[in-house]
Length: 264
Length: 264
Image (cartoon, rainbow over the protein chains, first blue to last red):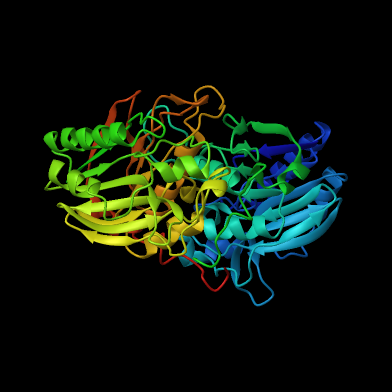
Protein backbone atom coordinates (compact mmCIF):
# COMPACT_ATOMS: atom_id res chain seq x y z
CA UNK A 1 0.00 0.00 0.00
CA UNK A 2 1.14 3.52 -0.79
CA UNK A 3 0.22 6.57 1.20
CA UNK A 4 -0.93 9.29 -1.17
CA UNK A 5 -1.32 12.85 0.09
CA UNK A 6 -2.66 15.98 -1.60
CA UNK A 7 -1.71 19.26 0.10
CA UNK A 8 -4.46 21.75 -0.70
CA UNK A 9 -2.38 24.90 -0.24
CA UNK A 10 -3.16 28.58 -0.74
CA UNK A 11 -0.16 30.09 -2.47
CA UNK A 12 0.09 33.88 -2.64
CA UNK A 13 -0.03 35.26 -6.14
CA UNK A 14 3.36 36.42 -7.43
CA UNK A 15 5.08 35.80 -4.09
CA UNK A 16 7.77 33.27 -4.88
CA UNK A 17 9.62 33.35 -1.53
CA UNK A 18 6.41 32.76 0.39
CA UNK A 19 5.26 29.99 -1.89
CA UNK A 20 8.64 28.32 -1.86
CA UNK A 21 8.52 28.05 1.91
CA UNK A 22 4.84 27.07 1.87
CA UNK A 23 5.44 24.20 -0.52
CA UNK A 24 8.58 22.91 1.20
CA UNK A 25 6.81 22.99 4.54
CA UNK A 26 3.87 21.06 3.10
CA UNK A 27 6.15 18.42 1.63
CA UNK A 28 7.99 18.09 4.94
CA UNK A 29 4.68 17.65 6.73
CA UNK A 30 3.53 15.06 4.24
CA UNK A 31 6.72 13.06 4.68
CA UNK A 32 6.30 13.19 8.44
CA UNK A 33 2.91 11.57 7.96
CA UNK A 34 4.45 8.80 5.90
CA UNK A 35 3.20 9.86 2.48
CA UNK A 36 4.91 7.95 -0.29
CA UNK A 37 3.41 10.20 -2.98
CA UNK A 38 2.85 13.89 -2.34
CA UNK A 39 0.86 16.02 -4.78
CA UNK A 40 0.91 19.82 -4.66
CA UNK A 41 -1.38 22.22 -6.54
CA UNK A 42 -0.87 23.61 -10.02
CA UNK A 43 1.34 26.72 -10.12
CA UNK A 44 2.07 26.42 -6.42
CA UNK A 45 5.16 28.59 -6.78
CA UNK A 46 3.47 31.52 -8.46
CA UNK A 47 -0.25 31.49 -7.69
CA UNK A 48 -2.72 31.45 -10.54
CA UNK A 49 -4.26 34.83 -11.25
CA UNK A 50 -1.12 36.35 -12.70
CA UNK A 51 -2.06 39.67 -14.22
CA UNK A 52 0.27 39.58 -17.21
CA UNK A 53 3.03 37.64 -18.86
CA UNK A 54 5.43 40.09 -17.25
CA UNK A 55 4.15 39.27 -13.79
CA UNK A 56 4.32 35.56 -14.57
CA UNK A 57 7.89 36.00 -15.79
CA UNK A 58 8.80 37.77 -12.56
CA UNK A 59 8.13 34.59 -10.58
CA UNK A 60 9.04 31.97 -13.17
CA UNK A 61 11.80 29.51 -12.35
CA UNK A 62 13.90 27.12 -14.39
CA UNK A 63 14.09 23.42 -13.86
CA UNK A 64 17.55 23.97 -12.34
CA UNK A 65 16.00 25.98 -9.52
CA UNK A 66 17.01 24.75 -6.06
CA UNK A 67 13.34 24.40 -5.09
CA UNK A 68 13.08 20.88 -6.42
CA UNK A 69 16.05 19.72 -4.39
CA UNK A 70 14.40 21.36 -1.38
CA UNK A 71 11.24 19.32 -1.99
CA UNK A 72 13.50 16.27 -2.23
CA UNK A 73 15.27 17.00 1.05
CA UNK A 74 11.92 17.60 2.72
CA UNK A 75 10.69 14.13 1.68
CA UNK A 76 13.77 12.05 0.81
CA UNK A 77 11.84 8.78 0.56
CA UNK A 78 8.85 10.11 -1.40
CA UNK A 79 7.71 11.07 -4.85
CA UNK A 80 6.64 14.73 -5.02
CA UNK A 81 4.57 16.09 -7.91
CA UNK A 82 3.88 19.81 -7.91
CA UNK A 83 3.01 22.59 -10.30
CA UNK A 84 5.25 25.55 -11.03
CA UNK A 85 5.55 28.49 -13.35
CA UNK A 86 8.47 27.51 -15.58
CA UNK A 87 10.81 29.67 -17.58
CA UNK A 88 12.23 27.54 -20.34
CA UNK A 89 15.78 27.79 -21.61
CA UNK A 90 14.37 29.82 -24.49
CA UNK A 91 12.66 32.25 -22.14
CA UNK A 92 9.16 31.01 -22.87
CA UNK A 93 6.82 30.48 -19.93
CA UNK A 94 5.07 27.20 -19.23
CA UNK A 95 2.49 25.92 -16.77
CA UNK A 96 4.52 22.91 -15.65
CA UNK A 97 4.70 20.11 -13.12
CA UNK A 98 7.88 18.74 -11.61
CA UNK A 99 8.32 15.18 -10.42
CA UNK A 100 10.91 14.64 -7.70
CA UNK A 101 11.67 11.05 -6.72
CA UNK A 102 13.76 10.44 -3.62
CA UNK A 103 15.40 13.82 -3.92
CA UNK A 104 16.01 13.85 -7.63
CA UNK A 105 14.11 15.80 -10.29
CA UNK A 106 13.11 13.06 -12.71
CA UNK A 107 10.67 14.84 -15.03
CA UNK A 108 9.12 18.16 -15.92
CA UNK A 109 5.80 18.13 -17.78
CA UNK A 110 4.48 21.21 -19.57
CA UNK A 111 0.69 21.43 -19.57
CA UNK A 112 -0.60 20.62 -23.02
CA UNK A 113 -4.21 21.82 -22.63
CA UNK A 114 -4.14 25.43 -21.51
CA UNK A 115 -7.29 26.80 -19.93
CA UNK A 116 -8.79 30.10 -20.97
CA UNK A 117 -6.56 33.05 -20.00
CA UNK A 118 -3.58 30.76 -19.53
CA UNK A 119 -3.33 31.02 -23.28
CA UNK A 120 -2.18 34.62 -22.81
CA UNK A 121 0.53 33.70 -20.33
CA UNK A 122 1.96 30.35 -21.23
CA UNK A 123 3.20 28.33 -24.17
CA UNK A 124 1.56 24.89 -24.26
CA UNK A 125 3.73 21.83 -23.95
CA UNK A 126 4.68 20.06 -27.15
CA UNK A 127 5.31 16.67 -25.55
CA UNK A 128 2.71 14.29 -24.13
CA UNK A 129 2.56 13.80 -20.37
CA UNK A 130 5.10 11.42 -18.89
CA UNK A 131 4.41 8.05 -17.32
CA UNK A 132 7.31 7.36 -14.97
CA UNK A 133 8.59 4.33 -13.13
CA UNK A 134 9.16 5.85 -9.73
CA UNK A 135 10.17 4.37 -6.41
CA UNK A 136 6.46 4.31 -5.52
CA UNK A 137 5.02 2.86 -8.68
CA UNK A 138 4.27 3.89 -12.23
CA UNK A 139 2.94 7.43 -12.16
CA UNK A 140 1.45 9.59 -14.90
CA UNK A 141 1.26 13.36 -14.58
CA UNK A 142 -1.47 15.69 -15.83
CA UNK A 143 -2.27 19.29 -14.97
CA UNK A 144 -5.84 20.44 -14.30
CA UNK A 145 -7.74 20.89 -17.60
CA UNK A 146 -5.68 18.07 -19.17
CA UNK A 147 -7.81 15.70 -17.11
CA UNK A 148 -10.92 16.68 -19.07
CA UNK A 149 -9.62 15.07 -22.26
CA UNK A 150 -10.46 11.39 -22.06
CA UNK A 151 -8.05 10.63 -24.87
CA UNK A 152 -5.24 11.65 -22.56
CA UNK A 153 -6.27 9.74 -19.46
CA UNK A 154 -6.78 6.67 -21.63
CA UNK A 155 -3.37 7.11 -23.20
CA UNK A 156 -1.62 7.28 -19.84
CA UNK A 157 -3.53 4.28 -18.56
CA UNK A 158 -2.63 2.30 -21.66
CA UNK A 159 0.99 3.21 -21.00
CA UNK A 160 0.69 1.50 -17.66
CA UNK A 161 0.13 4.35 -15.23
CA UNK A 162 -0.99 3.01 -11.85
CA UNK A 163 -1.66 6.49 -10.48
CA UNK A 164 -2.32 9.80 -12.19
CA UNK A 165 -0.99 12.70 -10.12
CA UNK A 166 -2.83 15.86 -11.10
CA UNK A 167 -1.89 19.29 -9.74
CA UNK A 168 -4.93 21.51 -10.31
CA UNK A 169 -6.41 24.93 -9.68
CA UNK A 170 -10.16 24.55 -10.06
CA UNK A 171 -12.03 27.86 -10.05
CA UNK A 172 -15.31 27.38 -8.21
CA UNK A 173 -18.23 26.90 -10.59
CA UNK A 174 -21.90 26.43 -9.71
CA UNK A 175 -23.15 22.89 -9.24
CA UNK A 176 -26.45 21.37 -8.17
CA UNK A 177 -26.80 20.78 -4.46
CA UNK A 178 -25.43 17.45 -3.35
CA UNK A 179 -23.24 16.98 -6.40
CA UNK A 180 -19.48 16.67 -6.34
CA UNK A 181 -17.41 19.27 -8.19
CA UNK A 182 -17.72 18.51 -11.91
CA UNK A 183 -13.98 18.03 -12.25
CA UNK A 184 -14.16 15.32 -9.58
CA UNK A 185 -16.96 13.58 -11.47
CA UNK A 186 -14.75 13.60 -14.56
CA UNK A 187 -11.84 12.20 -12.55
CA UNK A 188 -14.02 9.47 -11.00
CA UNK A 189 -15.11 8.35 -14.46
CA UNK A 190 -11.57 8.47 -15.83
CA UNK A 191 -10.42 6.33 -12.90
CA UNK A 192 -13.19 3.79 -13.32
CA UNK A 193 -13.09 3.33 -17.08
CA UNK A 194 -9.32 2.96 -16.97
CA UNK A 195 -8.99 1.14 -13.63
CA UNK A 196 -6.36 3.67 -12.53
CA UNK A 197 -6.07 5.64 -9.30
CA UNK A 198 -6.12 9.45 -9.56
CA UNK A 199 -4.95 12.05 -7.05
CA UNK A 200 -6.10 15.58 -7.86
CA UNK A 201 -4.56 18.31 -5.71
CA UNK A 202 -6.57 21.52 -5.86
CA UNK A 203 -5.67 24.76 -4.12
CA UNK A 204 -7.57 26.71 -1.47
CA UNK A 205 -8.37 30.31 -0.71
CA UNK A 206 -9.36 33.19 -2.89
CA UNK A 207 -7.12 35.11 -5.27
CA UNK A 208 -7.84 38.38 -7.02
CA UNK A 209 -11.56 37.66 -6.97
CA UNK A 210 -11.35 34.01 -7.93
CA UNK A 211 -12.61 31.47 -5.42
CA UNK A 212 -11.31 27.94 -5.65
CA UNK A 213 -13.28 24.76 -5.45
CA UNK A 214 -11.05 23.27 -2.72
CA UNK A 215 -11.94 20.00 -4.38
CA UNK A 216 -8.82 17.86 -3.91
CA UNK A 217 -9.77 14.23 -4.23
CA UNK A 218 -7.97 10.92 -4.06
CA UNK A 219 -9.84 8.40 -6.17
CA UNK A 220 -9.28 4.66 -6.28
CA UNK A 221 -9.23 2.46 -9.36
CA UNK A 222 -12.92 1.68 -8.87
CA UNK A 223 -13.66 5.37 -9.34
CA UNK A 224 -14.65 6.08 -5.74
CA UNK A 225 -13.43 9.07 -3.81
CA UNK A 226 -11.35 7.83 -0.90
CA UNK A 227 -10.37 11.20 0.52
CA UNK A 228 -11.07 14.90 0.09
CA UNK A 229 -9.58 17.98 1.73
CA UNK A 230 -11.13 20.91 3.54
CA UNK A 231 -9.76 24.43 3.20
CA UNK A 232 -5.98 24.46 3.45
CA UNK A 233 -5.98 20.87 4.63
CA UNK A 234 -4.81 17.60 3.20
CA UNK A 235 -6.42 14.58 1.61
CA UNK A 236 -4.74 11.27 2.39
CA UNK A 237 -5.45 7.69 1.41
CA UNK A 238 -3.65 4.37 1.36
CA UNK A 239 -3.90 2.90 -2.12
CA UNK A 240 -2.82 -0.40 -3.62
CA UNK A 241 -1.32 1.10 -6.75
CA UNK A 242 -0.22 -2.20 -8.27
CA UNK A 243 -3.89 -3.21 -8.38
CA UNK A 244 -4.31 -0.68 -11.19
CA UNK A 245 -2.50 -3.12 -13.46
CA UNK A 246 -5.49 -5.45 -13.40
CA UNK A 247 -8.01 -4.21 -15.95
CA UNK A 248 -10.58 -6.96 -15.45
CA UNK A 249 -14.10 -6.11 -14.39
CA UNK A 250 -15.17 -9.76 -14.39
CA UNK A 251 -13.59 -12.95 -15.67
CA UNK A 252 -14.95 -12.06 -19.10
CA UNK A 253 -14.83 -8.26 -19.12
CA UNK A 254 -11.70 -6.16 -19.25
CA UNK A 255 -11.63 -2.43 -19.88
CA UNK A 256 -8.59 -2.68 -22.11
CA UNK A 257 -9.05 -5.89 -24.07
CA UNK A 258 -12.74 -5.10 -24.65
CA UNK A 259 -11.78 -1.94 -26.54
CA UNK A 260 -12.53 -1.86 -30.26
CA UNK A 261 -9.67 0.12 -31.78
CA UNK A 262 -10.90 -1.05 -35.19
CA UNK A 263 -13.88 1.26 -34.68
CA UNK A 264 -12.27 4.39 -33.26
CA UNK B 1 -36.92 22.09 -26.27
CA UNK B 2 -37.32 18.36 -26.67
CA UNK B 3 -39.08 16.10 -24.22
CA UNK B 4 -36.89 13.08 -23.54
CA UNK B 5 -38.35 10.07 -21.74
CA UNK B 6 -36.75 6.86 -20.50
CA UNK B 7 -39.18 4.03 -19.72
CA UNK B 8 -37.55 1.87 -17.04
CA UNK B 9 -39.43 -1.32 -17.82
CA UNK B 10 -39.20 -4.85 -16.42
CA UNK B 11 -39.38 -7.21 -19.38
CA UNK B 12 -39.95 -10.90 -18.69
CA UNK B 13 -37.08 -13.10 -19.72
CA UNK B 14 -37.76 -15.07 -22.90
CA UNK B 15 -41.37 -13.88 -23.11
CA UNK B 16 -41.60 -12.10 -26.43
CA UNK B 17 -45.38 -11.59 -26.57
CA UNK B 18 -45.41 -10.03 -23.11
CA UNK B 19 -42.45 -7.80 -23.82
CA UNK B 20 -43.85 -6.73 -27.17
CA UNK B 21 -47.01 -5.48 -25.50
CA UNK B 22 -45.05 -3.99 -22.58
CA UNK B 23 -42.83 -1.96 -24.89
CA UNK B 24 -45.63 -0.80 -27.19
CA UNK B 25 -47.66 0.28 -24.20
CA UNK B 26 -44.71 2.21 -22.78
CA UNK B 27 -44.13 3.97 -26.08
CA UNK B 28 -47.80 4.87 -26.31
CA UNK B 29 -47.71 6.26 -22.80
CA UNK B 30 -44.60 8.27 -23.55
CA UNK B 31 -46.19 9.79 -26.64
CA UNK B 32 -49.28 10.71 -24.62
CA UNK B 33 -46.98 12.66 -22.32
CA UNK B 34 -45.50 14.53 -25.27
CA UNK B 35 -42.13 12.84 -25.39
CA UNK B 36 -40.24 13.66 -28.55
CA UNK B 37 -37.55 11.08 -27.84
CA UNK B 38 -38.42 7.80 -26.11
CA UNK B 39 -35.69 5.46 -24.91
CA UNK B 40 -36.40 1.86 -23.90
CA UNK B 41 -34.05 -0.57 -22.12
CA UNK B 42 -31.52 -2.88 -23.72
CA UNK B 43 -32.97 -6.22 -24.86
CA UNK B 44 -36.47 -5.08 -23.96
CA UNK B 45 -37.99 -7.72 -26.21
CA UNK B 46 -36.17 -10.69 -24.71
CA UNK B 47 -35.05 -9.88 -21.20
CA UNK B 48 -31.40 -10.18 -20.29
CA UNK B 49 -30.59 -13.35 -18.39
CA UNK B 50 -31.05 -15.66 -21.33
CA UNK B 51 -29.81 -19.08 -20.32
CA UNK B 52 -28.34 -20.13 -23.65
CA UNK B 53 -27.93 -19.16 -27.24
CA UNK B 54 -30.86 -21.46 -27.99
CA UNK B 55 -33.09 -19.56 -25.60
CA UNK B 56 -31.92 -16.25 -27.04
CA UNK B 57 -32.64 -17.54 -30.54
CA UNK B 58 -36.15 -18.53 -29.48
CA UNK B 59 -37.05 -14.88 -28.87
CA UNK B 60 -34.83 -13.20 -31.46
CA UNK B 61 -36.50 -11.09 -34.12
CA UNK B 62 -35.37 -9.66 -37.43
CA UNK B 63 -35.32 -6.02 -38.33
CA UNK B 64 -38.37 -6.70 -40.52
CA UNK B 65 -40.39 -7.64 -37.44
CA UNK B 66 -43.68 -5.74 -37.13
CA UNK B 67 -42.70 -4.58 -33.64
CA UNK B 68 -40.87 -1.52 -34.91
CA UNK B 69 -43.87 -0.36 -36.89
CA UNK B 70 -45.94 -0.89 -33.75
CA UNK B 71 -43.58 1.39 -31.82
CA UNK B 72 -43.99 3.86 -34.64
CA UNK B 73 -47.79 3.75 -34.57
CA UNK B 74 -47.70 4.14 -30.80
CA UNK B 75 -45.67 7.35 -31.10
CA UNK B 76 -46.08 8.64 -34.65
CA UNK B 77 -44.42 12.00 -33.95
CA UNK B 78 -41.51 10.70 -31.87
CA UNK B 79 -38.14 9.07 -32.12
CA UNK B 80 -38.04 5.71 -30.33
CA UNK B 81 -34.77 3.98 -29.45
CA UNK B 82 -35.02 0.54 -27.90
CA UNK B 83 -32.96 -2.59 -27.45
CA UNK B 84 -33.88 -5.94 -28.91
CA UNK B 85 -32.47 -9.40 -29.42
CA UNK B 86 -31.78 -9.51 -33.15
CA UNK B 87 -31.53 -12.44 -35.48
CA UNK B 88 -29.50 -11.34 -38.46
CA UNK B 89 -30.15 -12.46 -42.01
CA UNK B 90 -27.28 -14.91 -41.51
CA UNK B 91 -28.87 -16.34 -38.38
CA UNK B 92 -26.36 -14.80 -35.98
CA UNK B 93 -27.70 -13.17 -32.84
CA UNK B 94 -26.95 -9.59 -31.87
CA UNK B 95 -27.64 -7.35 -28.92
CA UNK B 96 -29.11 -4.51 -30.97
CA UNK B 97 -30.94 -1.22 -30.77
CA UNK B 98 -33.57 -0.02 -33.22
CA UNK B 99 -34.24 3.61 -34.01
CA UNK B 100 -37.75 4.42 -35.22
CA UNK B 101 -38.41 7.97 -36.38
CA UNK B 102 -42.00 9.02 -36.99
CA UNK B 103 -43.06 5.47 -37.66
CA UNK B 104 -40.14 4.39 -39.77
CA UNK B 105 -37.24 2.14 -38.77
CA UNK B 106 -34.24 4.30 -39.68
CA UNK B 107 -31.36 2.37 -38.12
CA UNK B 108 -30.34 -0.77 -36.29
CA UNK B 109 -27.15 -0.71 -34.26
CA UNK B 110 -25.47 -3.89 -33.07
CA UNK B 111 -23.67 -3.51 -29.75
CA UNK B 112 -19.94 -3.43 -30.34
CA UNK B 113 -18.74 -3.89 -26.75
CA UNK B 114 -20.30 -7.05 -25.37
CA UNK B 115 -20.38 -7.48 -21.61
CA UNK B 116 -19.28 -10.66 -19.90
CA UNK B 117 -21.64 -13.57 -20.64
CA UNK B 118 -23.12 -11.72 -23.61
CA UNK B 119 -20.03 -12.99 -25.39
CA UNK B 120 -21.55 -16.48 -25.24
CA UNK B 121 -24.85 -15.37 -26.76
CA UNK B 122 -24.24 -12.62 -29.25
CA UNK B 123 -21.98 -11.66 -32.11
CA UNK B 124 -20.58 -8.15 -31.62
CA UNK B 125 -21.40 -5.50 -34.16
CA UNK B 126 -18.82 -4.79 -36.83
CA UNK B 127 -19.97 -1.24 -37.56
CA UNK B 128 -19.58 1.79 -35.32
CA UNK B 129 -22.67 3.25 -33.69
CA UNK B 130 -24.80 5.52 -35.85
CA UNK B 131 -25.30 9.25 -35.48
CA UNK B 132 -28.61 10.06 -37.13
CA UNK B 133 -30.35 13.21 -38.23
CA UNK B 134 -33.80 12.55 -36.84
CA UNK B 135 -36.93 14.66 -36.67
CA UNK B 136 -35.90 15.52 -33.09
CA UNK B 137 -32.26 16.33 -33.61
CA UNK B 138 -29.01 14.55 -34.23
CA UNK B 139 -28.97 11.42 -32.12
CA UNK B 140 -26.22 8.87 -31.46
CA UNK B 141 -26.98 5.39 -30.19
CA UNK B 142 -24.97 3.27 -27.75
CA UNK B 143 -25.89 0.18 -25.75
CA UNK B 144 -24.93 -0.18 -22.09
CA UNK B 145 -21.24 -1.15 -21.75
CA UNK B 146 -20.43 0.80 -24.94
CA UNK B 147 -20.82 3.92 -22.83
CA UNK B 148 -17.80 2.98 -20.74
CA UNK B 149 -15.43 3.47 -23.66
CA UNK B 150 -14.61 7.15 -23.80
CA UNK B 151 -13.22 6.77 -27.30
CA UNK B 152 -16.72 5.97 -28.46
CA UNK B 153 -18.60 8.75 -26.71
CA UNK B 154 -16.00 11.19 -28.01
CA UNK B 155 -16.36 9.84 -31.53
CA UNK B 156 -20.12 10.27 -31.55
CA UNK B 157 -19.84 13.76 -30.11
CA UNK B 158 -17.28 14.70 -32.74
CA UNK B 159 -19.74 13.44 -35.36
CA UNK B 160 -22.20 15.98 -34.09
CA UNK B 161 -24.48 13.99 -31.82
CA UNK B 162 -26.65 16.30 -29.74
CA UNK B 163 -28.06 13.46 -27.67
CA UNK B 164 -26.80 9.96 -26.97
CA UNK B 165 -29.67 7.52 -26.48
CA UNK B 166 -28.43 4.55 -24.49
CA UNK B 167 -30.59 1.48 -23.82
CA UNK B 168 -28.99 -0.31 -20.86
CA UNK B 169 -29.37 -3.18 -18.41
CA UNK B 170 -27.19 -2.31 -15.45
CA UNK B 171 -26.80 -5.17 -12.97
CA UNK B 172 -26.75 -3.73 -9.47
CA UNK B 173 -23.21 -3.41 -8.11
CA UNK B 174 -22.15 -2.17 -4.68
CA UNK B 175 -21.40 1.50 -4.30
CA UNK B 176 -20.51 3.75 -1.40
CA UNK B 177 -23.46 5.34 0.36
CA UNK B 178 -24.55 8.58 -1.22
CA UNK B 179 -22.88 7.89 -4.56
CA UNK B 180 -24.68 7.63 -7.86
CA UNK B 181 -24.47 4.34 -9.77
CA UNK B 182 -21.01 4.13 -11.30
CA UNK B 183 -22.43 3.94 -14.80
CA UNK B 184 -24.22 7.23 -14.20
CA UNK B 185 -20.97 8.84 -13.04
CA UNK B 186 -19.37 7.67 -16.28
CA UNK B 187 -22.29 9.08 -18.30
CA UNK B 188 -22.15 12.41 -16.45
CA UNK B 189 -18.47 12.76 -17.28
CA UNK B 190 -19.00 11.74 -20.91
CA UNK B 191 -21.74 14.36 -21.19
CA UNK B 192 -19.66 17.10 -19.64
CA UNK B 193 -16.38 16.55 -21.46
CA UNK B 194 -18.23 16.34 -24.78
CA UNK B 195 -21.00 18.87 -24.10
CA UNK B 196 -23.59 16.35 -25.24
CA UNK B 197 -26.84 15.25 -23.58
CA UNK B 198 -27.19 11.58 -22.66
CA UNK B 199 -30.32 9.56 -21.90
CA UNK B 200 -29.62 6.15 -20.33
CA UNK B 201 -32.64 3.88 -20.03
CA UNK B 202 -32.05 1.09 -17.53
CA UNK B 203 -34.50 -1.69 -16.71
CA UNK B 204 -36.18 -2.56 -13.42
CA UNK B 205 -37.02 -5.68 -11.47
CA UNK B 206 -35.10 -8.83 -10.82
CA UNK B 207 -34.41 -11.61 -13.26
CA UNK B 208 -33.06 -15.08 -12.53
CA UNK B 209 -31.24 -13.78 -9.48
CA UNK B 210 -29.92 -10.60 -11.05
CA UNK B 211 -31.09 -7.32 -9.54
CA UNK B 212 -30.96 -4.24 -11.69
CA UNK B 213 -29.69 -0.83 -10.72
CA UNK B 214 -32.88 0.94 -11.84
CA UNK B 215 -30.52 3.78 -12.65
CA UNK B 216 -32.09 5.44 -15.70
CA UNK B 217 -30.79 8.98 -15.95
CA UNK B 218 -31.28 11.89 -18.30
CA UNK B 219 -28.16 14.03 -18.25
CA UNK B 220 -27.75 17.47 -19.74
CA UNK B 221 -24.79 18.75 -21.68
CA UNK B 222 -23.31 20.23 -18.50
CA UNK B 223 -23.12 16.71 -17.11
CA UNK B 224 -25.86 17.10 -14.50
CA UNK B 225 -28.59 14.57 -13.95
CA UNK B 226 -31.91 16.17 -14.81
CA UNK B 227 -34.14 13.18 -14.16
CA UNK B 228 -34.00 9.65 -12.78
CA UNK B 229 -36.62 6.90 -12.57
CA UNK B 230 -37.90 4.83 -9.69
CA UNK B 231 -38.81 1.18 -10.11
CA UNK B 232 -40.84 0.61 -13.25
CA UNK B 233 -41.30 4.33 -13.69
CA UNK B 234 -40.11 6.91 -16.17
CA UNK B 235 -37.49 9.62 -16.24
CA UNK B 236 -38.44 12.71 -18.22
CA UNK B 237 -36.70 15.98 -18.95
CA UNK B 238 -36.99 18.84 -21.38
CA UNK B 239 -33.65 19.40 -23.06
CA UNK B 240 -32.35 21.98 -25.50
CA UNK B 241 -30.60 19.49 -27.75
CA UNK B 242 -29.31 22.08 -30.21
CA UNK B 243 -27.29 23.59 -27.35
CA UNK B 244 -25.06 20.52 -27.54
CA UNK B 245 -23.60 21.97 -30.72
CA UNK B 246 -21.84 24.69 -28.72
CA UNK B 247 -18.63 23.24 -27.33
CA UNK B 248 -17.38 26.37 -25.61
CA UNK B 249 -16.76 26.39 -21.88
CA UNK B 250 -15.66 30.03 -21.91
CA UNK B 251 -14.81 32.50 -24.65
CA UNK B 252 -11.34 30.97 -24.71
CA UNK B 253 -11.98 27.34 -23.86
CA UNK B 254 -13.69 24.80 -26.07
CA UNK B 255 -13.78 21.07 -25.44
CA UNK B 256 -13.27 20.27 -29.09
CA UNK B 257 -10.84 22.89 -30.36
CA UNK B 258 -8.71 22.56 -27.22
CA UNK B 259 -8.04 18.92 -28.04
CA UNK B 260 -4.47 17.98 -28.99
CA UNK B 261 -4.84 15.26 -31.60
CA UNK B 262 -1.13 15.70 -32.32
CA UNK B 263 -0.51 14.07 -28.92
CA UNK B 264 -3.00 11.21 -28.89
